[in-house]
Structure formats: structure tokens, C-alpha cells
Image 1 (cartoon, rainbow, N blue to C red):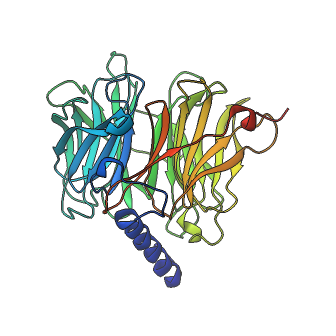
Image 2: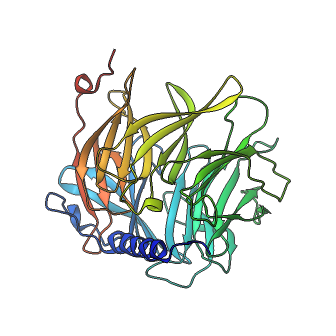
Length: 389
């Protein structure tokens, strides 16, 4: 059994159900506005589609993805294009190294029967070219990542997806620009809800990092598994285990002035929100071994759903944002001791949000069936966020 305690199973199901309700039908508190009467949404994203330094807003509602550009002042957000896809929009990936916007579609509220599909969209028109599809299973994409895996100049695309209720695998798409990209599939891993490939140790070759919400069928909190990546090996063997305290939700490989590291959030539904604490951690390689550094604890949240690292175009200041179950936070690095978690905006426990920079202003967006909610964010001045010496 996945859960030995049936009460734990019931609580977990209830939590997931409530998360879906919040995500699909949440209407935020007063103070959020519907600028330009933005359409309803189930998920929201942002991306610099034309790579001009200003973000566009991507609104997903059922199978439709619509892009909006900020025109400034009273003009607000103007529709750029809209595209109807083969399933519910689950995630997007914009990377300046390729010309396309990568979009993952699947099943969800609004279309409960749909294959998992990954497409390349032309960023300024929305014209779609399907790269990969999988019929059956849970139709849910875990992660999308562009990575250099072989000797040719073209990047490969990592797709991690559910193939059944509890099992996931990775698919590497090679030759993305060809009419039929080659798919290299791995074996399955139980409850691998985060998956990426990166150079963590600075040596030749890459590492594969798999995050599991629950460590195994006994219902443990979960862990990170780190092993050498093998492109041609179909088997995925669990490598060095890094336990989590309360379960892993999201992880990113991010490059900042401090270097390139793996960042992840510790704290998720394994403790049903009662004991878990949202914690930002950093994993790095030093003297031949893996080290995990605890960076910041949220005082009142049990998870960070997402992590964003951005550079403010005006001040050139490095900005760390997290989206937790109580709001959107600015994480302020300190030279010594824990980093500071500062709440920028308060929200209900909704599992999706987006931040964007447009019109010399930072924005936050939340999905809502009553119209996508938008609010400008005021960041504290650099003097108030200076590091401790």
C-alpha cells in the first residue's frame, strides 16, 4: 500500500482536492484588480516572448493559451495571440537559447481526457508544432528543461512525465528542429515529481537529480536522488540519497553572482500542512561531496510552490522570489546567517501564480474564473534589503 495509515491517505486526498479547488476557482482578496478585464484563467505564466527585456503575460484557460503584451498607462495589457491546443495547458518554458516557446498540454479541469503533448509555439504568433505526445496514464508533465547533452550544437529537451498514477519517467527529445524529434525514454521511478539534469560537481559529465515527494511506498517524506546521467541508458538507478525534512516540492538550477547551484524547497503535503515548514535550500558540491545549505525558512508557510530568480533591469539588483501557500515573497540574501523572507503580497493557498516585469514595474498575477487578477508589486529599497555584514 502507498499509505500504511488510511487516515493519512484520506487527508492527502483531501489536501490535493482542496488544492485543485483553490487553483481552479480562487478569487483573491480585495486589493487585486482585473486590469483591462483580463479573461478567466486556470493557470498563469510570464515569459519574454520577443526578448526585449519586458515580459508578456500568458493566460491558460482550459485548452486555450492567450498571450498579452503590456502597452503601459491606461492601455494596460493587450491581447497578442490566442491558441487552442490538444489539452489543458500545464506548463511553459521560454529559453533565450531557442526561438520557440515550449508548452506542455495534458488532462485537467476543463478537459479530463487528453494525451500528454509537448509543443513548440512561435512566440509572436502562437503557431504550434507538436514535438512529442504520449497517450495513456495520468497525462501530467512533471518538468521541462533544455540542456546540452551531446556533441551537436542543438539543445535537447528533457520531458519528465507521469506514465501511471504513481510512476514517472524522463524522455529526452533530440533533434528538436527536425519534423520528427527522436525520443529517448528511461525506465520509471515511483513518485518522482521533480526531475532535472545539470553539472553539479564541476567535472566532466552531468548529474541527474530526481526529487520524490514520498521516498517510497512506505509513505516517507521524500528525498533527492543524485546520480550520473547516462543518455543511452534506459535504466534509472537511484543514486546518492539526500533526505528531505518534510517533502520536496520544486527545484531549480539557477546561476547568480554566487555561482550555479541547485535550489529546492523542502516542505510539502507529506505532513499535510501541519508540521511542514517552507524552507529554501541550496545544494552544492565541495571537496568531493554533496553539501546542503539551509538558506531561509518561511515563518508561516508549509511549502514554496515555485522559485524565481530575476535581475531587476533598472537597478541590476538580484531578486529571489518564492510563491508559498500564503503569498508571494522576496527572499533577501544575507552575508551571514539565514536569508530573510519578506512577504510582498498575501494570497490564499493557490498552487499557481506568476510574476512579470513590464513597463518599469514588477507585477503579480493569480488565476481566477472571475478574471485573471493582477497587482503591481512594490519592492523594498536596496537600503532596506542590504546584506548583514
